[in-house]
Every structure is written in structure tokens, then in C-alpha cells.
Image (cartoon, rainbow, N blue to C red; front, top):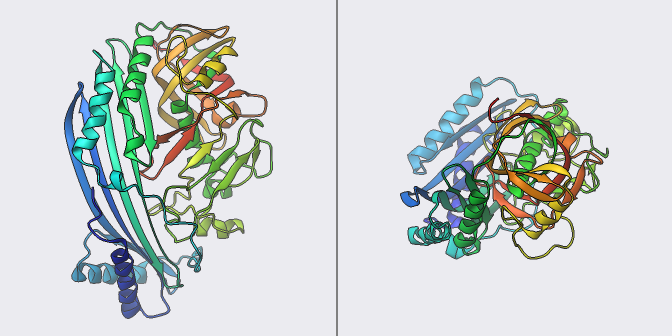
Amino acid sequence: MTAATPAGVRLELAGRVLDLVRSAAGTGTQVEVTVGYRELALTRFANSAIHQNVADDTTTVRLRLHRDGRTATGSSTLTGPAALADLVDRTVAAARVSPLDPGWPGLAPPARLPGTGTVDPATAAASPADRAARVRAFVDAAGDLRCAGYVRTVYCDTAFVNSAGQDASGSYTSAALDGVARTGTSDGVARLLARRLSDVDGAVLGARAAAKARACAEPVEVPPGVYEVVLEPTAVADLLSCLAVYGFNGRTVAERRSFFRAGEAQFDPAVSIVDDPVGGLPFDAEGTPKHPLDLVEAGVSRHAVYDRRTAMQAGTASTGHALADAGGFGPVAEQPSLRPAPGGGPVGEVDGPPADSSVADLLAGVHRGILVTDHFYTRCLDPRRLVMTGLTRNGAWLVRDGQIVSAVRNLRFTQSYPQALAPGEVRGVGAHAVALPGSMDMAQVLTAPALHLARWNFTGGASG
């Protein structure tokens, strides 16, 4: 992967579009222009063999303007003079017939950025052979088990300008591996996100996935009910994602569709969540700088996240969480991180499924519960209480008096996530946090340790 266009050229291109709008619509028009360049390369494998290698590089020009009380947006992946002129003409024309926008918050003022992002040149230039080497290591480590998954590398570079004088640019790289190993009756998963491909060890992840698959072969069925749970980081990442989308979203808070109440002890004191943009773009889709933001501090809800529109509605300032093309969805924390417990040791294994040493410590405190590797197909039933339903996946085990008894078949759960993390409900937090790829977009990073929770409501077993 190589950046086909220097970053400075993208900033110049954004400025050129800004000048075109001024010529077409007049200097009184408020304008934002974003030029985003992304290289995505993906190597997929199934049945322990690579079956697809694809790469795509795209430059997208996004334009948003506000004139005469009306707002319009447009975008193009063509950057020639005629295409840019067409983008400007049709966006200006759309503004003339758009409804009035009384909630327009104005443009982000000029502000200094906290950095420029993090780019690893080797990851930006990664070849198919580099990704294939991780696949080979994963498959070899899994031995005779069938494997499937992907290895991806991403390079993003973005430039932003607006007519209020703000200009910004930044770039980042990331790499991820997500793979499963399969026996005839079970699956085991391992996944990881890193800023450098060199930090993705296919052999370690393949061995982990295979050991989990073997440990949960021939699972038994257990009755539904309320159990203690130890959720591994791959399952905790789902909690973080749903809290970010439905709970800390400034729009859902303003519309009273969220549980979030700033200043209240809504979580157990062991829970601290921060949205930390380190390594990603240093500004949001409106050009507002990003900074670390405490969402939950020692159990106390501190901040929701806002873009400019929702911040104006709430009487506060943007936190730098505007999303491109979000429509009416609202702002989202893209890099939430649940802080692990202090201390911890090296990654190791427990008796049964592999886990880091902090998972073994958490299991020791379980009287009667279930160890859960992963969540699958989670859907929101009640946004106000954040009641989610979904399935366990890729390995679950019955635990009694700190010992793994047997693998269990997948279970359906129906559970309020804030209730599961409420005061007195968190019995332990793992000492090791893992960065995992999110499902929302390429920029989402979910960093999670394992959790021991007092109660989790399983509402259905494998047979219903």
C-alpha cells in the first residue's frame, strides 16, 4: 500500500473546492470541505487457504454548505476539474430547495490540533505477501483444524478546510486479524487490532483460536437462567460498542433515549471508560480537534459525546465526535477503552480455554457461572435501558467454584448492559486490555479487558 497522492495535495484540493463554492454561491455561504484518501487491503481465507486478496484506494471529496438558512451536502469520488465543478453546482442547487435548518450550529472555528495521527510506513506499504504470511502463521499454528478469517491493512489520510478559517490534516495506519479455527462441533476465535502490521502475530492468534476450539468441542446444553459470567475481551468489546452507540451519544441523551445521566454513579466503581483518539485522526468530520474524554470515571458517568449540532442543543461544546454522513444518527465515541485493573502478568493459559492470566484470576472467583468468549448478532430491544439481546459464540464454558467443568452450547441472552455494570455488579476487571476492531467502520477501535459480572440473564438455550 502506498499513498498515491501526497497529503499536502489533498489539503490544496480541499481549498480549491472551497474557492469554487465562494465563486458559485458568494462569500456569505458557510462551507466545509473534506478530502479523504483511504487504502484498504484485505486478504481473506477459508478452509485454511487464501481465497481472496483485494485492494482498493479511494479519494472522496465531501462538501457541506449552509446558505440562506438552508443546509446541503454532496460528495464525489472524482477529483478532476469538471467533476469538482459539478459537485459544487449540484450542492449549491440542492441548498436552494432544501428545507430551512434552524438547528445549524455554524462552523468549527480555527483551533490547533493535538497531533497529526500515527502512520507506520511498513503497514502503509504492506504487500499481499506480508498479509499472507500472517495467514500462513495462523493456519500452521492451528494444526489440523480448519481456519477462516481475514487480515487487513488500512492507510487513511484526510484534509479538512472550512470558510471560518479552520484547516486540518492527519493520517493513520491500522492492521487487524480476525480468525476462527474449527473442529467438527466447535469454533474458537482470536482477533486483534494494531497500528502496525508487525504487531499482529498470526502464530499466537492461530494457537489461541485452535486451543479454544479444542477446549469447547462436544459442548453440553445448560438451562437458561441468571448466571455469573466472565466475559473475555472479545465479548466486552460488544458492551463498549453498544454503550458508545446508544448510551454516550449526545443525540440520544438530548432526546432522553439514553440511560446516561452525567454526575451520577451509574456504574460500579471498578468501571472507568475513556474515549482516546490516540493514533487515529486528530479531528472529527467538522474539523473539531479530538482529545481524550472521560465517559465514566470510577463508576460515575462524566461526559456524553457531541458534535456541533447536538452540543448546541445541549448548551455545551462539541467534543470532537462528529461523523461523516451520520445523517440523524448523532455523534459516537469511536475509540472507547475500558481501563483494566492495575497490575497483571504475562499472557498465559488457564485449565481449559486459553486466556491471559487475568482471566484465570477472574475465574477463580466464580461460584457458578459461564465463561463467554464472544457475542454475536446483538440487537437493541430497549434503547432507554440499553437492553440488548444476542448469542454467545466461539466458545462458552460452565464454571463451578473457580474450575471449568465443561463446554456449553451457545446461549441467547437478554440483558441491560448498564444494569450488568451497575454498582455492586462488577466482581472483577482483568489486568490486560486488548485492542479489537469494531464493526462500525475502519476507524473504530474497542479496547477491553475481561470482566467478571455478578449477573447475566440467559433467556434461551440451544434448543429454544
